[in-house]
Image (cartoon, rainbow, N blue to C red; front, side, top):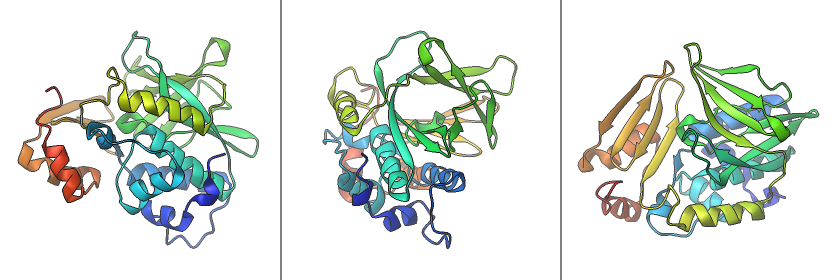
Length: 278
């Protein structure tokens, strides 16, 4: 399904910092947690190729070349296709889902987000390495909707709605501080479905990725979101700090804060765009 047999698993594990693990990866919960956390910690979310007007390729070798060998980041279709291929190669049962972003309040958005459901010992787990700075760092159990799921200083919850819809939310420290992130149905999605969603997200004029530099990272102590030249820091207590990044500081910030070192070509392309809102 996910072309895991085409993936260089050793190179992928080295990219996410698990290459020196003496334990052979196997399809168990311990491995799922380790791979998911390592992936989200090592590969930043970014959609720069969309900004540059380049096609976003979703075949496994193209994603491997970009995210693993070139040490770039990617957005949800790339991130979760790579994660799915790696998990499939290890031996996990992996299924796709299409999710509807809910971070814009009551605005009804199309299904454009890709997530994964991984089954371990008969139990389903939500896995998502591609929701940017707001996403989970670790798998989330789907067998017991409603229970809070702490992940370090951050807490998530999956809520079941009518029609079998599952909604993921981020739970804040204060009473009533809960923010819906996205919702998805039980319908399985296949890689070919993500090709269609990817086409919209990378080329449609109404896509939120068009004309904007977006780079994000779900850190443990602080979560980072760079949109254009505006850097937002989100803390576990809900506090946010925003700052504008000077053009001369942008490339250093990408490497320092996001672990993203751009090639000469990509750096020059990025600096051509003065601001996200222009």
